[in-house]
Image (cartoon, rainbow, N blue to C red):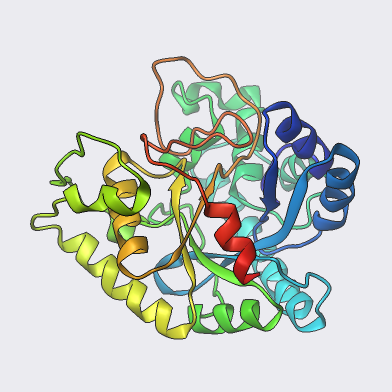
Length: 311
Protein backbone atom coordinates (compact mmCIF):
# COMPACT_ATOMS: atom_id res chain seq x y z
CA UNK A 1 0.00 0.00 0.00
CA UNK A 2 2.85 2.39 0.77
CA UNK A 3 5.35 0.85 -1.61
CA UNK A 4 6.71 2.16 -4.88
CA UNK A 5 6.58 -1.20 -6.68
CA UNK A 6 3.70 -3.38 -7.86
CA UNK A 7 3.02 -6.66 -6.04
CA UNK A 8 4.41 -8.57 -9.01
CA UNK A 9 7.60 -6.51 -8.97
CA UNK A 10 7.98 -7.17 -5.25
CA UNK A 11 7.64 -10.90 -5.88
CA UNK A 12 10.24 -10.77 -8.64
CA UNK A 13 12.66 -8.98 -6.30
CA UNK A 14 11.94 -11.52 -3.58
CA UNK A 15 12.79 -14.33 -5.99
CA UNK A 16 16.03 -12.61 -6.98
CA UNK A 17 16.96 -12.12 -3.32
CA UNK A 18 16.54 -15.81 -2.51
CA UNK A 19 13.33 -15.45 -0.51
CA UNK A 20 11.37 -18.70 -0.43
CA UNK A 21 8.36 -17.82 1.77
CA UNK A 22 6.86 -14.37 2.19
CA UNK A 23 3.70 -12.55 3.19
CA UNK A 24 2.37 -9.38 1.62
CA UNK A 25 1.00 -7.28 4.50
CA UNK A 26 -0.10 -3.93 3.12
CA UNK A 27 -1.51 -1.26 5.44
CA UNK A 28 -5.28 -1.55 5.80
CA UNK A 29 -5.81 -3.10 2.36
CA UNK A 30 -5.81 -6.51 0.69
CA UNK A 31 -6.00 -5.14 -2.85
CA UNK A 32 -2.55 -6.47 -3.78
CA UNK A 33 -3.10 -10.06 -2.66
CA UNK A 34 -4.62 -11.57 -5.85
CA UNK A 35 -1.69 -10.29 -7.92
CA UNK A 36 0.96 -11.39 -5.43
CA UNK A 37 -0.58 -14.85 -5.02
CA UNK A 38 -0.64 -15.35 -8.80
CA UNK A 39 2.93 -14.12 -9.12
CA UNK A 40 4.00 -16.46 -6.34
CA UNK A 41 2.60 -19.45 -8.23
CA UNK A 42 4.37 -18.40 -11.41
CA UNK A 43 7.70 -17.79 -9.68
CA UNK A 44 7.60 -20.79 -7.34
CA UNK A 45 7.45 -18.77 -4.10
CA UNK A 46 5.15 -19.64 -1.23
CA UNK A 47 2.94 -16.65 -0.39
CA UNK A 48 1.00 -16.20 2.85
CA UNK A 49 -1.96 -13.81 2.40
CA UNK A 50 -1.77 -11.11 5.04
CA UNK A 51 -2.53 -7.57 6.12
CA UNK A 52 -1.26 -4.90 8.52
CA UNK A 53 -4.01 -3.12 10.44
CA UNK A 54 -3.50 0.14 12.31
CA UNK A 55 -5.01 0.08 15.82
CA UNK A 56 -5.88 2.91 18.20
CA UNK A 57 -3.85 2.09 21.31
CA UNK A 58 -0.29 3.48 21.10
CA UNK A 59 -0.70 3.67 17.31
CA UNK A 60 0.29 0.00 17.03
CA UNK A 61 0.10 -2.13 13.90
CA UNK A 62 -1.20 -5.68 13.94
CA UNK A 63 -0.35 -8.30 11.33
CA UNK A 64 -2.79 -10.95 10.24
CA UNK A 65 -1.24 -14.00 8.52
CA UNK A 66 -3.23 -16.57 6.55
CA UNK A 67 -6.38 -14.46 6.38
CA UNK A 68 -9.50 -14.97 4.28
CA UNK A 69 -8.96 -11.75 2.38
CA UNK A 70 -12.33 -11.97 0.61
CA UNK A 71 -14.35 -11.87 3.84
CA UNK A 72 -17.14 -9.25 3.62
CA UNK A 73 -16.79 -8.02 7.22
CA UNK A 74 -13.07 -7.50 6.79
CA UNK A 75 -13.54 -5.64 3.50
CA UNK A 76 -16.17 -3.35 5.05
CA UNK A 77 -13.82 -2.44 7.91
CA UNK A 78 -10.98 -1.79 5.48
CA UNK A 79 -13.18 0.55 3.43
CA UNK A 80 -13.73 2.66 6.55
CA UNK A 81 -9.98 2.77 7.14
CA UNK A 82 -9.39 3.72 3.51
CA UNK A 83 -11.68 6.73 3.75
CA UNK A 84 -10.08 7.79 7.02
CA UNK A 85 -6.61 7.60 5.48
CA UNK A 86 -7.77 9.62 2.47
CA UNK A 87 -9.17 12.45 4.59
CA UNK A 88 -6.09 12.46 6.82
CA UNK A 89 -3.70 12.54 3.87
CA UNK A 90 -5.52 15.49 2.29
CA UNK A 91 -5.27 17.45 5.54
CA UNK A 92 -1.55 16.62 5.86
CA UNK A 93 -0.93 17.99 2.37
CA UNK A 94 -2.62 21.24 3.39
CA UNK A 95 -0.52 21.38 6.58
CA UNK A 96 2.69 20.89 4.60
CA UNK A 97 1.67 23.58 2.13
CA UNK A 98 1.16 25.95 5.05
CA UNK A 99 4.58 24.93 6.37
CA UNK A 100 6.12 26.18 3.12
CA UNK A 101 6.42 23.08 0.97
CA UNK A 102 5.33 23.08 -2.65
CA UNK A 103 3.02 20.13 -3.20
CA UNK A 104 -0.39 19.51 -4.75
CA UNK A 105 -2.86 16.69 -4.14
CA UNK A 106 -2.36 15.65 -7.78
CA UNK A 107 1.35 15.07 -6.99
CA UNK A 108 0.39 12.68 -4.20
CA UNK A 109 -2.07 10.79 -6.40
CA UNK A 110 0.64 10.43 -9.04
CA UNK A 111 2.97 8.86 -6.46
CA UNK A 112 0.23 6.55 -5.21
CA UNK A 113 -0.45 5.21 -8.70
CA UNK A 114 -2.75 2.21 -8.40
CA UNK A 115 -2.33 1.91 -4.62
CA UNK A 116 -5.58 1.27 -2.79
CA UNK A 117 -4.79 3.69 0.06
CA UNK A 118 -2.87 6.95 0.40
CA UNK A 119 -0.14 6.91 3.05
CA UNK A 120 2.72 9.10 4.28
CA UNK A 121 5.42 7.77 1.91
CA UNK A 122 3.29 8.91 -1.05
CA UNK A 123 3.19 12.44 0.37
CA UNK A 124 6.91 12.40 1.14
CA UNK A 125 7.84 11.29 -2.38
CA UNK A 126 5.60 13.97 -3.89
CA UNK A 127 7.46 16.66 -1.96
CA UNK A 128 10.91 15.20 -2.63
CA UNK A 129 10.30 15.19 -6.38
CA UNK A 130 9.35 18.87 -6.56
CA UNK A 131 12.57 20.85 -7.28
CA UNK A 132 11.00 23.91 -5.65
CA UNK A 133 11.42 22.18 -2.26
CA UNK A 134 15.18 21.65 -2.53
CA UNK A 135 16.18 24.55 -0.29
CA UNK A 136 13.55 23.88 2.36
CA UNK A 137 14.41 20.16 2.44
CA UNK A 138 17.89 21.15 3.70
CA UNK A 139 19.60 18.01 2.50
CA UNK A 140 16.76 15.54 3.18
CA UNK A 141 16.74 13.16 0.23
CA UNK A 142 14.95 9.98 1.35
CA UNK A 143 11.33 9.20 2.14
CA UNK A 144 12.25 7.84 5.57
CA UNK A 145 14.22 10.94 6.51
CA UNK A 146 11.40 13.24 5.39
CA UNK A 147 8.86 11.34 7.47
CA UNK A 148 11.19 11.44 10.46
CA UNK A 149 11.61 15.21 10.08
CA UNK A 150 8.10 16.31 9.10
CA UNK A 151 5.47 13.56 9.33
CA UNK A 152 6.00 11.63 12.55
CA UNK A 153 2.94 11.17 14.76
CA UNK A 154 4.29 13.97 16.98
CA UNK A 155 4.73 16.43 14.09
CA UNK A 156 2.33 19.38 13.77
CA UNK A 157 1.92 18.37 10.11
CA UNK A 158 0.59 14.92 10.99
CA UNK A 159 -3.15 14.35 11.17
CA UNK A 160 -4.24 11.68 13.61
CA UNK A 161 -7.22 9.72 12.42
CA UNK A 162 -9.43 7.40 14.41
CA UNK A 163 -8.46 3.74 14.31
CA UNK A 164 -10.11 0.48 15.14
CA UNK A 165 -9.38 -0.64 18.71
CA UNK A 166 -6.70 -3.28 19.18
CA UNK A 167 -9.18 -5.71 20.74
CA UNK A 168 -11.56 -5.27 17.80
CA UNK A 169 -8.72 -5.60 15.26
CA UNK A 170 -7.51 -8.84 16.84
CA UNK A 171 -11.04 -10.26 16.92
CA UNK A 172 -11.57 -9.24 13.30
CA UNK A 173 -8.34 -10.87 12.13
CA UNK A 174 -8.94 -14.06 14.09
CA UNK A 175 -12.49 -14.14 12.75
CA UNK A 176 -11.14 -14.38 9.18
CA UNK A 177 -8.71 -17.16 10.07
CA UNK A 178 -5.70 -14.95 10.71
CA UNK A 179 -2.78 -15.55 13.06
CA UNK A 180 -2.32 -12.20 14.82
CA UNK A 181 1.17 -10.78 15.38
CA UNK A 182 2.26 -7.42 16.84
CA UNK A 183 4.13 -5.66 14.05
CA UNK A 184 7.52 -4.03 14.76
CA UNK A 185 7.29 -3.34 18.49
CA UNK A 186 8.56 -1.38 20.36
CA UNK A 187 7.06 1.80 19.00
CA UNK A 188 8.12 5.25 20.28
CA UNK A 189 5.75 5.02 23.27
CA UNK A 190 7.76 2.09 24.55
CA UNK A 191 11.26 2.94 23.35
CA UNK A 192 13.73 3.74 26.16
CA UNK A 193 15.86 6.84 25.85
CA UNK A 194 18.90 4.73 26.58
CA UNK A 195 19.27 0.97 26.78
CA UNK A 196 20.98 -0.86 29.61
CA UNK A 197 20.61 -4.35 28.21
CA UNK A 198 23.84 -6.28 28.59
CA UNK A 199 25.22 -7.46 25.28
CA UNK A 200 25.04 -11.15 24.58
CA UNK A 201 28.54 -12.40 23.86
CA UNK A 202 27.61 -15.76 22.38
CA UNK A 203 24.82 -16.75 20.03
CA UNK A 204 23.35 -20.14 21.06
CA UNK A 205 19.98 -21.39 19.73
CA UNK A 206 17.04 -19.00 20.09
CA UNK A 207 15.49 -20.43 23.26
CA UNK A 208 18.85 -20.31 25.09
CA UNK A 209 19.94 -16.85 23.96
CA UNK A 210 17.65 -14.97 26.32
CA UNK A 211 19.24 -16.27 29.55
CA UNK A 212 22.09 -13.79 29.11
CA UNK A 213 19.85 -10.77 28.53
CA UNK A 214 19.89 -8.44 31.54
CA UNK A 215 17.46 -5.54 31.83
CA UNK A 216 18.09 -2.89 34.45
CA UNK A 217 15.71 -0.03 35.11
CA UNK A 218 14.02 -0.16 31.72
CA UNK A 219 10.65 1.35 32.55
CA UNK A 220 9.64 1.65 28.92
CA UNK A 221 10.28 -2.01 28.24
CA UNK A 222 8.28 -2.87 31.36
CA UNK A 223 5.37 -0.83 29.97
CA UNK A 224 5.64 -2.66 26.66
CA UNK A 225 5.51 -6.02 28.44
CA UNK A 226 2.44 -4.94 30.40
CA UNK A 227 0.67 -3.89 27.20
CA UNK A 228 1.73 -7.13 25.53
CA UNK A 229 -0.09 -9.08 28.25
CA UNK A 230 -3.20 -7.04 27.50
CA UNK A 231 -2.91 -7.84 23.78
CA UNK A 232 -2.42 -11.53 24.59
CA UNK A 233 -5.61 -11.42 26.65
CA UNK A 234 -7.41 -10.28 23.52
CA UNK A 235 -5.89 -13.10 21.46
CA UNK A 236 -2.49 -11.92 20.18
CA UNK A 237 -0.36 -14.90 19.16
CA UNK A 238 3.03 -13.57 18.11
CA UNK A 239 5.67 -10.84 17.94
CA UNK A 240 7.61 -9.52 14.98
CA UNK A 241 10.98 -9.77 16.70
CA UNK A 242 13.18 -8.76 13.75
CA UNK A 243 12.51 -5.80 11.49
CA UNK A 244 14.22 -2.78 10.01
CA UNK A 245 12.80 -0.76 12.92
CA UNK A 246 14.57 -2.67 15.68
CA UNK A 247 17.87 -1.96 17.35
CA UNK A 248 19.90 -4.90 18.65
CA UNK A 249 18.78 -4.27 22.23
CA UNK A 250 15.14 -4.16 21.18
CA UNK A 251 15.42 -7.38 19.17
CA UNK A 252 17.02 -9.14 22.14
CA UNK A 253 14.25 -7.94 24.43
CA UNK A 254 11.50 -9.03 22.02
CA UNK A 255 13.07 -12.47 21.64
CA UNK A 256 13.10 -12.78 25.43
CA UNK A 257 9.39 -11.91 25.59
CA UNK A 258 8.52 -14.41 22.84
CA UNK A 259 10.31 -17.17 24.72
CA UNK A 260 8.89 -16.15 28.10
CA UNK A 261 5.28 -16.16 26.89
CA UNK A 262 5.63 -18.90 24.26
CA UNK A 263 4.67 -16.58 21.42
CA UNK A 264 5.27 -17.06 17.71
CA UNK A 265 8.20 -15.14 16.24
CA UNK A 266 8.14 -13.49 12.83
CA UNK A 267 10.43 -11.16 10.90
CA UNK A 268 9.70 -8.49 8.34
CA UNK A 269 11.61 -6.17 6.07
CA UNK A 270 8.85 -3.51 5.98
CA UNK A 271 9.98 -2.99 2.39
CA UNK A 272 8.76 0.14 0.61
CA UNK A 273 11.09 0.67 -2.33
CA UNK A 274 14.35 -0.56 -3.77
CA UNK A 275 17.16 1.80 -2.81
CA UNK A 276 20.94 1.73 -2.62
CA UNK A 277 22.29 2.71 0.79
CA UNK A 278 25.84 3.79 1.64
CA UNK A 279 27.68 1.09 3.57
CA UNK A 280 27.96 3.40 6.57
CA UNK A 281 24.21 3.82 7.01
CA UNK A 282 22.40 1.53 9.44
CA UNK A 283 19.34 3.51 10.48
CA UNK A 284 15.77 2.59 11.32
CA UNK A 285 13.37 2.48 8.38
CA UNK A 286 16.18 2.22 5.84
CA UNK A 287 15.30 -1.15 4.34
CA UNK A 288 16.96 -1.52 0.96
CA UNK A 289 15.53 -4.80 -0.35
CA UNK A 290 12.77 -7.39 0.07
CA UNK A 291 13.80 -9.74 2.86
CA UNK A 292 16.30 -7.26 4.28
CA UNK A 293 16.17 -7.12 8.10
CA UNK A 294 18.82 -7.44 10.82
CA UNK A 295 18.84 -10.49 13.11
CA UNK A 296 22.00 -9.58 15.06
CA UNK A 297 23.19 -13.17 15.03
CA UNK A 298 19.93 -14.69 16.27
CA UNK A 299 18.45 -17.63 14.39
CA UNK A 300 15.16 -17.49 12.45
CA UNK A 301 15.04 -21.27 12.12
CA UNK A 302 11.54 -22.62 12.65
CA UNK A 303 9.72 -19.29 12.33
CA UNK A 304 7.77 -20.28 9.21
CA UNK A 305 7.17 -23.85 10.33
CA UNK A 306 5.66 -22.77 13.65
CA UNK A 307 3.53 -20.11 11.95
CA UNK A 308 2.15 -22.60 9.43
CA UNK A 309 1.33 -25.05 12.23
CA UNK A 310 -1.26 -22.65 13.65
CA UNK A 311 -2.56 -21.18 10.40
